[in-house]
Length: 332
Image 1 (tube, rainbow, N blue to C red):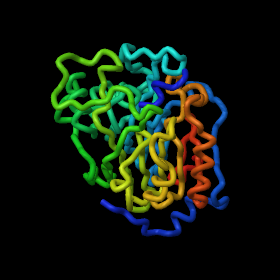
Image 2: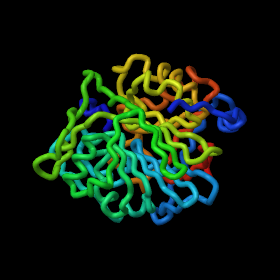
Image 3: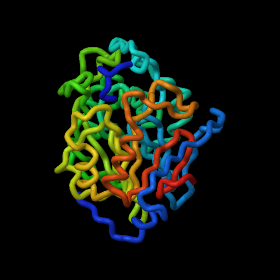
Image 4: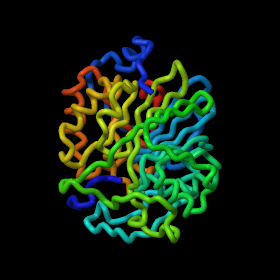
């Protein structure tokens, strides 16, 4: 989840250098916010991308839907976005978990793979329903495994990973990256801890979901398609990401400066990606039918400026809920 609960209120090198040039775009180093105008909720129904091309849709928070040739991969798909008081100054750890099935079905399509970064509610709350409704393969930590089993998900449907694995899903390659959860101003975060067995009772509240270690993923949907580095929290293991060299980097915006030189260290370790996409900067208790509203604890403008300063050749794309992006992160 966000790190602001105490705030007010295998190594891969790019083989085709030309692809990186195209991805960066003509306006080298220019930030390119692509915030679309509101559209009717009925128009937000998700459809698969055309054959032979990869598309990306931001699901808010750190979530993504990736489509290629009729196949769908989800990352941290949290679309129910229920109220906890986090953005209203009255955060309640006892908030009951819920999943809006109709809203979930509107956005997820028929996922084949669901990647989970960690087990806080704003990353995993909709995953039990998605798993049981679609039969998708779920990839996550041991804690994620035990929580999903407690929710009634078939254990054989879940792949437990630790970081370092490279998984081949019939042409969709997933590199699992050991990562870290972001910290607040006190260098702490909400609901730490790991599980080594299913909880004695089905989790009922958001505080029943411990972080359970954090992962990042790099997804490549084909030899000629871009690689996308996906983060679920704003911290990282420098050694784990060194040499990944993704084309696209979906980077979580921090709400504090607790992580030393977060942006410069990360961009350097990733090899200054062609496209940087800030995520986890929105108010994730507002519906996806509305335009993104900023989390007041996140300084998105300062983040964009720092990325531009540290990696001037990277194109910066501020995503919108209603836009489908191509493999170059330009609107389709």
